[in-house]
Image 1 (cartoon, each protein chain N blue to C red):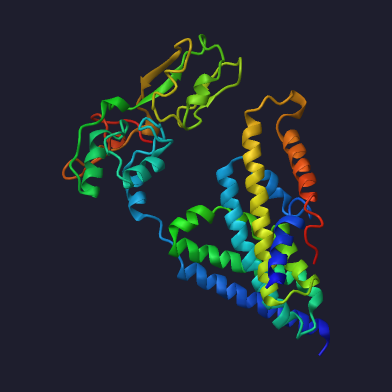
Image 2 (image 1 turned 60 degrees about the vertical axis):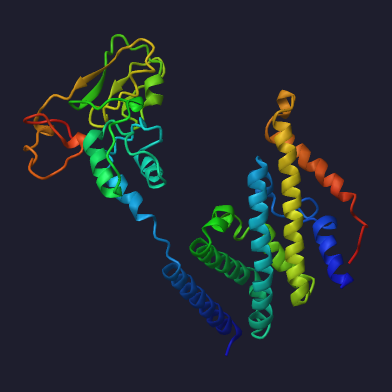
Length: 198
Length: 193
């Protein structure tokens, strides 16, 4: 048998063996992510606003799984706290005022463009990159992306950002949610006819 | 026995992989900003290098030599080292989360780093026996860790020192590394094998 053939066969066998070994290891040593973190994350409103003090909803979910308080999520509000308490088997607590208050209606940021000086401070504050603009250029909010988390209001040096309630139109009108026996998180709870949906 | 000791001293100090043979320079410059990460990297490298010299020796002696395929050593070493390290990483992750947290993120980084491949190839070139190969790999890794820790500790101090503007950042790190290499040259002639 020619030597090149032997080389090919030996290396192919080696590669096959190693592939099988790694494949086996991947199945045998599979690490299940902490399933409770995903369940908690599903209950959080996914506004990624950081009002809880963590850089997003997933990190907060991990912190809750590690034993943090469940009452630090203003966008989720009371219903999220109830759902979390139910999932984790702990007593529901009132929303921690330190992290902000729950909003009655969903809002969206609006920049009064005449007054904007183009300082980019609100762009840096926005956790979901919903503000468009450049230095010394007027900024504006991409309403579809805005989660209404209020984080851009504070840094604005000229106070030209308003949080306005979301107007109802065809894009965000929903049938009324079922009421009996269903617990909804705050962002899904809507005033009588309609409201925003993330 | 003295022979084994000589191998260790030789690889750790005299023929230091980083400063004398200039292997594994990327982690040396890249992961030496903080002492803590340097220690983690050193531990992971020790682990990988020892493992790499064992499995590359076995592969070479029992597979490549009998089939007369020694010209394929580079590629087969890369494969075997990558697989063994990958396998160990998976196993550690499952069995010991603590160890995984210490070594985990560094393991894939150094899988087939030039120092790792260098140890495997130098073992063949020096015709080391099995035990010698293990010691050679282990010694090289200890030398690497030693230099990493020393260098990281120096960089931490340099970070707060008043460095002239043209020398700030990587430049002063390079100069420091060069001076360290000069210092390690002083070990030449300590032992010879």
